[in-house]
Length: 163
Image (cartoon, rainbow, N blue to C red; front, side, top):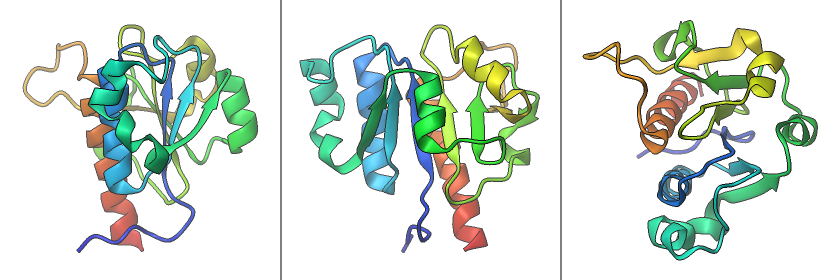
């Protein structure tokens, strides 16, 4: 049986998510893994929308840690630094399997169309991570919730192995 590593836990962040079902799916992912979910505004939907509820809002009381007004607010309030941040982007030069995760790390993903904003990428330029496209390397990207699941489970696997 999988037991979550002791505190501090991994944290998953969605910066400016636009599609309610993606955020709902990520909320469900966070609920089953015990991972706090942080959202960075502006959001492309209201947290009470029916579509979001159907896709996972019923888990909100078990996962949602905070909503932040901006990326800078998240950095300030969350204590993010160069050592505990992983920015997931298709432009990353470091692959997921070469990345080392530790309990307490922040896994940060951007919105569905544009990805992470420049302010996030410029703040932590050495912390870009890409999820490999194994069969079709020219494909633009994975769906946001799929990428979040792949990234989180690899980070959990490493934390479990280390702990």
